[in-house]
Length: 110
Image (cartoon, rainbow, N blue to C red; front, side, top):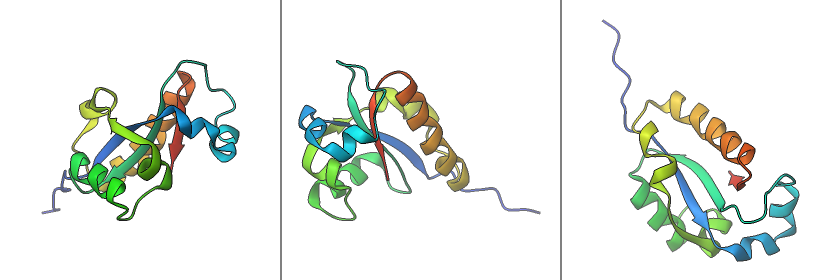
């Protein structure tokens, strides 16, 4: 009998502070950003999103934008999808980033 995939992976969204827009690299990756929309980082993890956010802020396997500009998690943008198997989380991370960009968010993904 095939093993059931473990549902312990999560996608998560971190709101980034406005100062992230000062990064030319971030601006280049968000040419369709709509003024006034949030800046976010979209990731996936096998940890609880709260633990992963704390690790980013502590500099442990951290994305520099989250470490320097991370304000808070935005579960309103991701909680409905979690938890899920690994491969679904990998795909959902990309799809969620695309969907948020289409809404005008400034998005960074690893």
